[in-house]
Amino acid sequence: MRIEYDRDVCIGMFQCVAEWDAFEKDTDAGKAVLADSEEVEDDLFSREIPGDAELDAKFAARACPVDAITVYDDDGEQIIP
Image (tube, helix red, strand yellow):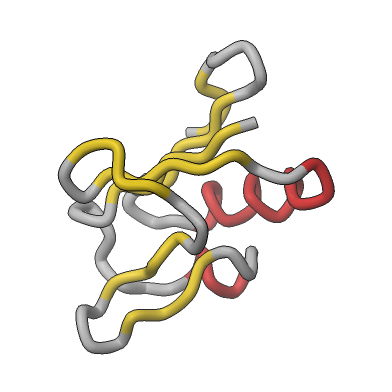
């Protein structure tokens, strides 16, 4: 599984931070940070989801009030949102 995070869309509610420890608060910017990710486009970050963190990553994506987080299955199909 893979997760993408659009930092530009993020409004800094930090609900993702409460759901998965791969998300951290950047209080200076008022945005979340996706740890161990790479920037694939301007403000779009991506990383693989470890097998033991799939449920937490899904919860983080579902908790985002502005759909800044997208989860893809192993076949590349978008599953959340």
